[in-house]
Image (cartoon, rainbow, N blue to C red; front, side):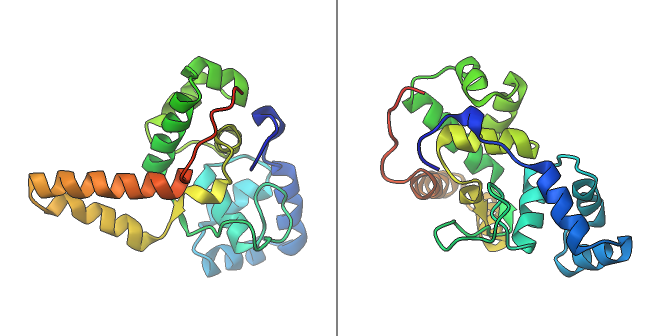
Length: 194
């Protein structure tokens, strides 16, 4: 995601609703789809009704349909692959880093991204948010929404850090955080005024 205003970004809930209704016209077909991709029928039903849901659940539905969540078109090879789960803490750290590098307060991010201040705060704390806020904050950070996804194996590896000694744990956590932030943000962050 390069250039443009964060306000121009958004998630097309009605577009996803129409796609799901066309591909899976019956409740039974939606249940089969949800079971096949381990999505949870409740999340699929919410999307089928055109209701926004948690970002990770909506992105998983788009990934199961092989759609880019920004365009609702088939995935392009240039789009990062959705790994299955969102790394909420990594997203929060990355968002905070981008905000600080750009010299913005949370209230400025609120205005630029067009999301409530509570959503900005929640995201920076690494807590799940709904799809509209997530896509808007990804646009503010100028990163594709899939960039913050990780595999279950990566989450498990992060969880094992708690089983080591305190000093070893701290060193591993610092190294893992540096590596993850470097991967997510890239080697440089533009210092534009947004």
